[in-house]
Length: 244
Ligand SMILES: NC(=O)c1ccc[n+]([C@@H]2O[C@H](COP(=O)([O-])OP(=O)(O)OC[C@H]3O[C@@H](n4cnc5c(N)ncnc54)[C@H](OP(=O)(O)O)[C@@H]3O)[C@@H](O)[C@H]2O)c1
Image (cartoon, rainbow, N blue to C red; front, side, top):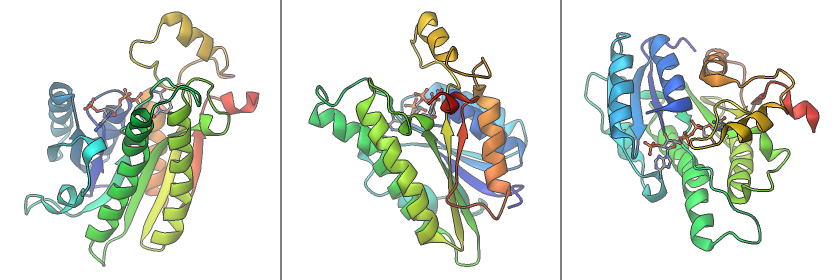
């Protein structure tokens, strides 16, 4: 897919990894529907950075835990904006819980944001995509679905289901829409994480460093541009999965 002039919707695009992905899309010439929830100021700042690269940016606020019908995100666009052909599901939460202590509310919140929202967004995207256009979805997931955390139970289950959804959707939406995922490793320390925690995480990475946002952005553009990849989940871990 040639990205120049395409419209891309990215969830959680205001800051951190989502911001890096959004700016990479903008550098590749994509106009953006930049979704955010609480981070209005940071979304505005990211939008300004993207606009300075010469693309159009439309900001859209939505709480994904309450989003029952995402259709307007795809259909309610200014007339001079092309239909959305790229969907990047990056927004997620990373709560600390275990099988024995999670609550029903916590389970519901994690599954709603990390799984239900990407599924409903993909459905709305596929329904809204005009018949004569190709589309691509990239889900941001986590390689730790293969080696589950002890401490992030509902998150791990939600991302594992997102992996399965990626493959199921790739079959269902072929040949017009490709669906892939990037299974991230240690890219950025979780907000509020201690330096000691982060050093312990990095000690498990054979390449001995964090991935940062640029390597995630590079992989996103690769998956979007390569028209023969679908149903693929690329691990981006610095080799951490080899320690399994
Ligand atoms: N950081 C890493 O090293 C790492 C590792 C593995 C996987 N990942 C995955 O990579 C993606 C981005 O990670 P990150 O560390 O940059 O995430 P983050 O800093 O925790 O940011 C979470 C994002 O999700 C959005 N979000 C959270 N709750 C929401 C809700 N109810 N409605 C709408 N949006 C909501 C936030 O938007 P607002 O701030 O606007 O509310 C924010 O943009 C996630 O899918 C994460 O699981 C990250």
